[in-house]
Length: 304
Image 1 (cartoon, rainbow, N blue to C red):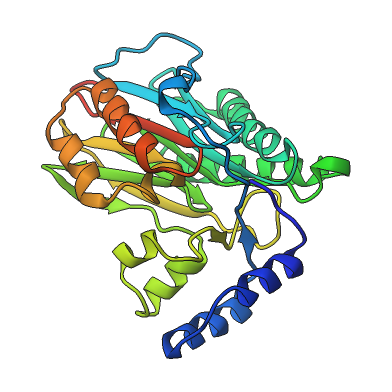
Image 2 (image 1 turned 30 degrees about the vertical axis):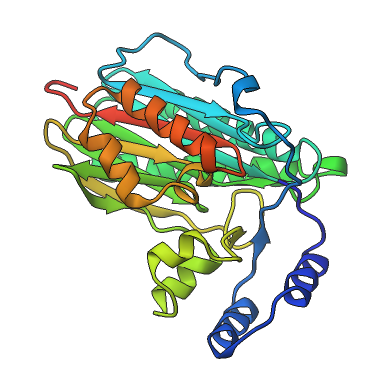
């Protein structure tokens, strides 16, 4: 995702927009939010020629429990990263979507998941309680944020990344979110909980100017308001109770900006296996997306 100078990008956006009365609210919100614009020139990609998706696994996991894919999709390179790691009695999962010029987005997202993994490996212990886990995830985001900022020099200047991470322990899922990648808890065919995007269109939704469905196709959907490595770091923490059969889903915006909620739910309803869920969603996304695509699915099973 290219990240030219902020003011130049805002000027280009505003120059090409014809605002009506509703758009006046958008201009007001633009003035209120510090923004990061995710954008990269598209390349012509023949879906039949797309290379096999990358699986960022460090070990073999049962596809009945967890499965993930990250792929460049309709971009020239992949700036997403995913993490699937079992550490003692927990699963550590994450999706990161990099922003920045040249290869900076890829560098930032890789740094984020690597630092997250190393921090949890070094500091997690089985006697930690839920509040400890929340603090540990938050700390991991903060460390990654600082390290990315420190390395944001030269052609990596202004690099950043979203990061949606989670620790699953027994019947609990603790989620930390920065940016507009997402985590969902799906139960009995319904979205019970999901993370809230740090984005311009989410601000429009929150203030009642547009619907969530309209946000998915809005012309300013690529504007994010927080990312690791950039100013105004935001970290939202969620605590979700799990029951057997729950599906947890993580995605970069290459999925959820192009595939509607009902389509996502239909895939989950029709598949029990995380691998089948991920691969079907991936194939649907490739027909629509103009971005990298990353997806992880986790199925809560007894004793997991």
